[in-house]
Length: 502
Image (cartoon, rainbow, N blue to C red; front, side, top):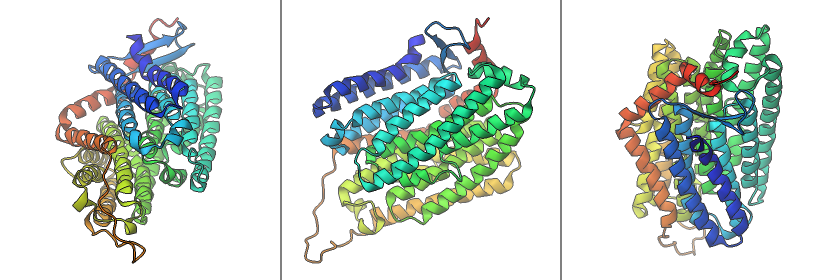
């Protein structure tokens, strides 16, 4: 059973090593990464099956007992996050077969992507703070390599903003690690669950929690620390943007949920959750308003990443079983829908030659499958029934009403309507209106471009998963309730990790 926790990290790393050895042979690298992604997906499915009934797996690496060694642990929440990572990883690898050119492959594209996938899974499975920091650093290095791979001015500008603010986050996180270790003598999260409450200086605990909130808030692109995201993501190839948009900011959300349900659970946590509640509202509003003002498809979608993060943090801030259930479902739904919208954006670029809304049109008449795939994900993001986003929003808003935060429930509903406005704007401009005439009046209109099946198939597959998830929501809700219950009552998690501790 212990290898079930190792394989989701080890397989992408082994694939990265293999692609280093053969990256000059582009076709070999393509097929090798497809095989690696398929094995990664199989390992993630096996891990989820092992914890499906509420079981928690833990392994101490190197034989060192907890809390002294490196711990890997999987409960329902972390296992399902590993699975959704593997799904997006597989889809992006298939899409990359045509989206990424040979020069980018030789520059290390597949190597960086495999390392990034391994680091994301490592962050979801680690059981101690220092190794969470290590995986964040691996993510930062791999993602920065992908950001500047094309060496265009816009990429370098966005990459500098990305890495600068994330280095600030890293420094804050490292400072908190030192502070927590100085107060408790441990960095194992299960061990911290009991020891943080025994610290004789509550203001120090509050300071550590606040610093962590800022560090993870930068990673998650929370208000007012989100400006790096819309500056960086629109400069990326569609395949890379899909992986980034679906997963990187969600690792920050995951870390916040894990820390504020497992470690900072004392009365002082009320203050932290109040701040998170307020920040969630501002994140939703500023993200959606900024998106509504854009006229470039990737920038609209980038600002909606920010806006949607607010719903997840709102669920965390309420700290009720229903709210956390809604937050978990929102995470899963948003990863699928947002990644797929960026994949659809890449196909629009292939079909029409631009991402700008004024320069494209007529996609619906010429590309029916692309239009369907985009529409499913766009309506899911906006929260239209019966798609997955509707149920996720409904649970979060219902939890907000049950907590008697009526104004915030109204804000969440209004943000959903403004999200629908943005999706309708993209649909009307890109898909519904006729294609604009060529810029040169003497130039003949281009014929219909053929879309690559390698790019179209994963986009349709993710749209299909989104649709099925919405239509078969009952088992998803039941699983999310199990995950939320484990978060709110972490005794089984602590026991699984610290079993046999002297």
